[in-house]
Length: 381
Ligand SMILES: [Zn+2]
Image 1 (cartoon, rainbow, N blue to C red):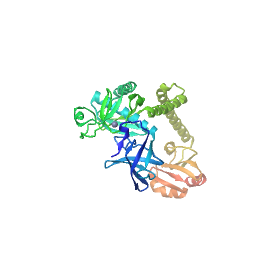
Image 2 (image 1 turned 180 degrees about the vertical axis):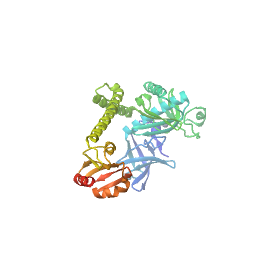
Image 3 (image 1 turned 90 degrees about the vertical axis):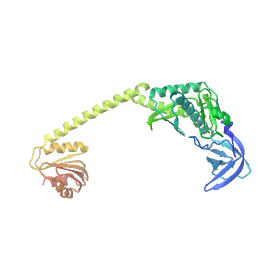
Image 4 (image 1 turned 45 degrees about the horizontal axis):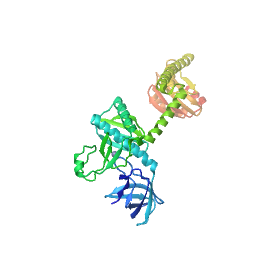
């Protein structure tokens, strides 16, 4: 049985231990120690990483009651090794995990909602509650958690004896009555949890709720604490500062300014569409009406405008109205007619102009690899 050193001291970064066994498992080794400060994966928190002498600890898992450190190189059975945790990562996880307990404790005390999902990823922490919380309630909770952090109350972890456990009311109550580890945030929360926590709430630094959404009849929150929260706030500040600079407005006025810019863009799009319609009508008006075919060549026109041009042109000709956009060898076309069945003519037209495409009897669409001269020779023969 490996002694869990973090039970007594969650801030232990370095320790010595004796290697009980080391078994090869493919490209890694499973190492059991007589004691360890490495936290095994559990309770929503990932396993610690670090090193044992020169071997990297890639993962730590509890397998059939035994704590196994998976390393990238072997260690000698019986030797004494120095274990070193990737402390920065572990400390950030403790900040986030302890912050989550404070929040869940307050949610339970105020609303009776239970924490039904917890994921502690690096840079992203999600918590699910089985009841809905609106923005105002979440803001009040966020303030209350940060107040509890600033009060710097003690956090204690212990394994109460069965008799004591039976008298306690705590969250995440388990069926077990032995080896239940309780984590207490003085005056705020009592919960069963196996993970290492901060010693006082002040270490959490701060807690930020970043986002919330409805989730399975309750709510899912994205939150961050401490150094992760600070880095996230910095990134958000930079994003807002950039928008503020681009729009030349104070940072807090960026939402209003972006709305204004989008509205102006919408007005411009409509004005542009109206101008295009006028240009197309002018182009159609400029050609002489004919009983034969009509051809338009445009250097750069979108397909919607090209279609409008064909529609306007069809009113001026008795035969086919063909509109091309692009350049020699690379045309896109729309061809329309009020008098002919273009679908049945599509094959002949495509053969003549090196094209591909098809459509309805009154309008076909496609591409052509011919030159303007070849196209004109075919339609104006
Ligand atoms: Zn926990």
